[in-house]
Image (tube, rainbow, N blue to C red; front, top):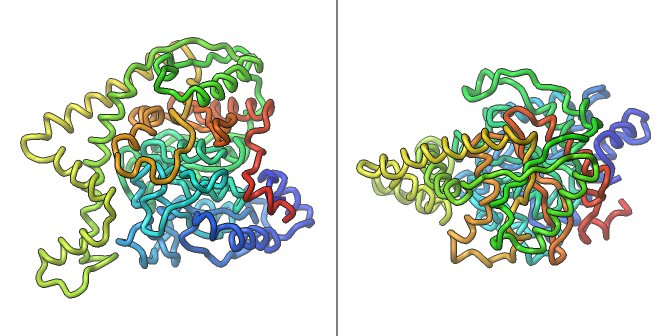
Length: 478
């Protein structure tokens, strides 16, 4: 049951062979027994089984990344600043999943305010990778990826600002999709960098991602950046042949900077796409290093603005016995934010300051346009782009803690996609040193259906997405 797809679980529920309460109970019991060793959840929610329904996700349990507001539930963003905050309203994503009949089991751990690539920056402690407890699960959606990999829920929500769905999905051997910017509403999703943040899905397979994304996506008047476009039935085209599909391979992504074992796994995955009928073409994407530098100016600048609301006055953490208003601000923010959040606020404030705005922020915006233009040129030659998600497999916890710049390099292949606002996926593609590797697929704007089709066709030929880490396999009798 724990490795069953969403359609398989729905068939059991509709046939009456399984009740929503029994299904939720199975996963709740797994959380109880397995999660203490992973720390993938921040809080649990009493599951409310829906009435009988034909909705796509009726009775299917899931987990929320603890950045999505759900009325009456604690929503912490992995921070001391919001450690005890209970949301008074629902995010659009939560509303839509509830309408589709999905059953919330809990909120997953994450890097504080989504700032990190390892899930070591949470106020609630680091998350362990289910494949190797010494390894990080990736970030910032590491709790969601680890929980799905350990089969604690059929799917989980995530957010992707610079790779925060795709990178942890790759590290944990699960499937994750970041849709086009604007495809999923950001209303009720606590902001890190508003022009980059995008909600998405982490699940076992492309098919499961297609079902969930179809329920999450769509226009929302409450989000000014929401795209007013029809949402296709992502499941309708999963079975289409990819014969003749042009797959672009960025030559700059396969260099000595890429771990050879990761490169071999990704090359083998691309060979499977060729065997399924796709054609490959070498493309030029020369801006990975430029994109990385631009992102780590632009995103912190937006974070500096967004996080100014956490001041100890309106809601969230407040320091004890402040002497005056200035002391209230200073100590609340010093005590409430962790080191990485403070680092990015300082970088962003500096980049926006008088005398440095043109030298840093404006130039970074020009670089963003350049990255987007190079993707446009690449898509004149191909239909999708394929390559690695990360330069290495998951690294050991603590390995990059003293070197933030080295940590940031883990996002070098994912960040360009966010700068351009394109859809991207991570698909399990094997192992390097016993730790999972992800194949990254990138599409044109609003072409999620094609990405899901390619990923699904690949997953019909391989079984990497069905393999379970030891912590899950040892309990697979449930």
